[in-house]
Length: 461
Figure 1 (cartoon, rainbow, N blue to C red):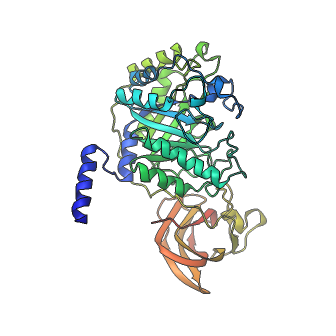
Figure 2 (cartoon, rainbow, N blue to C red):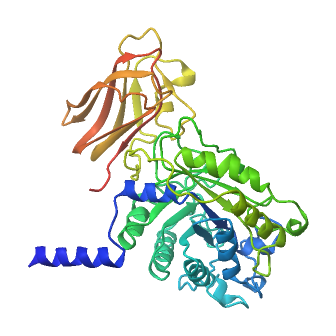
């Protein structure tokens, strides 16, 4: 009976369009969307500052002429395929009917669920719906070194609302999390918990974290899609990228509307097409262009004109390139971070703990006179782990090595052989073992052994 039930359930899901896809299929589908509209619209709209007073009164939020249908038609005019709305930005104001806080649109004079109106309008135009959500929440005092269990429960409940009440969500773009400026780590707010919560409600929803300022471009650290914010100096390599990616840029001068916008030229439509959409599509990258509604809740005339021009210059031809199948995202906490390290001789500016300091810009460099370098991380007690990730200084430095773990005082093998060819980030997954230390012995290196980060993880199966 159980097999019959599961088969019937799978048929129902397939017919309803909610059949679960593989992550690689979802990544390919996302890249094939080619271009979409980011919509930064929230409390900062009512300030000339993207970082408004976190205690600003909800009375300020009153977009009396808001028309999400205008937004959707404008996206359609540019041949875009989806939208993504800032449901909550860093100052914590929620623009949906949330039960988690009074700091929301329902406490404003507007009293309308912006997320719902946006989702309905975009779907009516045949566009897919994505949502942006900030972990950093300065109104709720959810900030570095002040995270409480209540904060984490609030995050989960807010995401549960967004994933439950607004139909199929193609992707969630998360911000303010484990970036150098936000300083809220994946330990403070456990990434794996949040990731699995989203997937448990909407298995086909991609989870993207805007963390390219910290993590290397060669692997999916804590994200299903590698994301680049051009305005922050993050640029995808159109020649070497092999991962499904997203690149974002505002059409206007800032993410949120400013008083100068109606009379200030926007970015050139031909640049958006010829320097972004077209070449990025060939590099497995989706381009999302931000357009900021004004305080009435409408797009300015110069923005509407530019979007129409983009639509004249570019016809969305969908699929351009087959996205290479990538290693699964790394989603668990790094249990090696800042643990006791030992290794072979090195100079003071590059000693052992630079390889587990949670900073990919620093390295442990074994002294060039050492013929067989080794490096170890020791934990305070035996614990489970099932993945080791070695981030080399460059693609071809490490050539061959051995990985071992220690249990009950004895060293046991995990891996010995050649390094994955041409991969700066070397990911080793294996059945879960228990140990109190991990050791790498370098058997062959192309120059001085230099390790940016050595991570150990235990992902839930």
